[in-house]
Image (cartoon, rainbow over all chains, first blue to last red; front, side, top):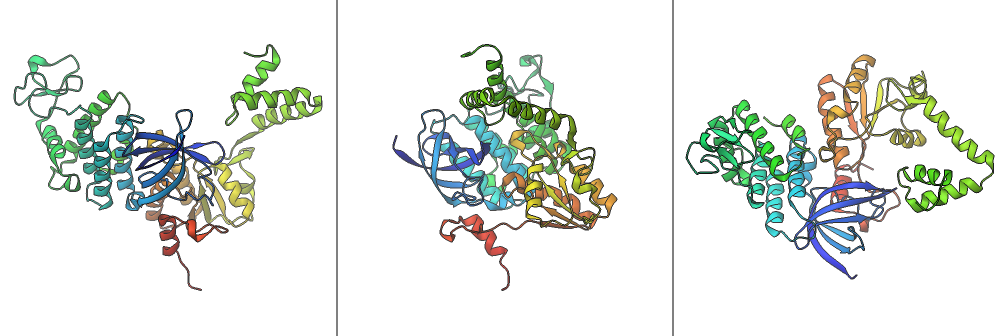
Length: 246
Length: 198
């Protein structure tokens, strides 16, 4: 197979054998790609820091016979270094990378997802005051892109305004008539916070947001419970995000 | 199943080892079968002995014969300097270089949210207890210079600094023996930030 060129963001890397790694990259043209970077863990590897998570890279790869491609060259377009040098930014960034990894399909082009991810990373790179709000706003936008936008006011089933209950399975806020067995009462303030985060510009997410930590925590729990329900996976980065967030 | 009886059992057991595939397991199994009986017996005994006698040091978390490792037992080591590493193999690498005059503290991994490893899964509380109890003055954070290692270093430093301890991190930059031409921007910028007066 001839080598091919791509650009994308490194989502994660796992160790392989003695000195190699398997890197997962969200690429612009080929969707999610998993590729082997040979010898990358050696101190003299020519890859250096080029394939560290968060890095936006230009790549040369060749297709493998199995599920894994091989990276032959990498060049940094944006290192997003600030995210790696602050724990709160790192926690928010990891949540973004994990959410993208869950939604993206291998070798299925999804340019809007790449654009959203780059916008999210740029917003974090600017060192916002509330990185967790940027991550939460990002996850809401990503859910919308994946077709799981939660209803945050009107009933998700009948559209009646001011729905007082929440049901992840029914798609968000629900009225009493449409509630399923798993529906639970939801604080209207929590829905307001989520609605503000859903519509906020990523770079400005969190600015002027209701500061009550109790409401923020409840909104976070509701959002990630909803995301986990629809993405059918546990979000492992949430505990660290919660520990660094307001 | 290509073989039957003990040879297949041996291949299956060897294939469970990390980095050993079915082909390698088969090669090793046949080598052991053909080897003189003493050789196979020595290997088997070494494995059993290691499992029986090796534990983790209650002080530093490194591998040890007994409840404290050789380095923690050595009174000539500086008790006020601690070098924090991810794994016992990292401590062994630093020890081979003979540069650390103090003792080690093995965390048992690095913070990696996507792998489900959080700070509570590492030996961080033991580190804080040790620093307070032993009057440690400097903690050298020698976690790997990658994303997870850096996050762990930041986390540990944030907890240690309020205790009034000097917290340092191993320098990152150009590898000795490498070519500048192949250096990436992140490594280069760290090398430049860490440049020294000549």
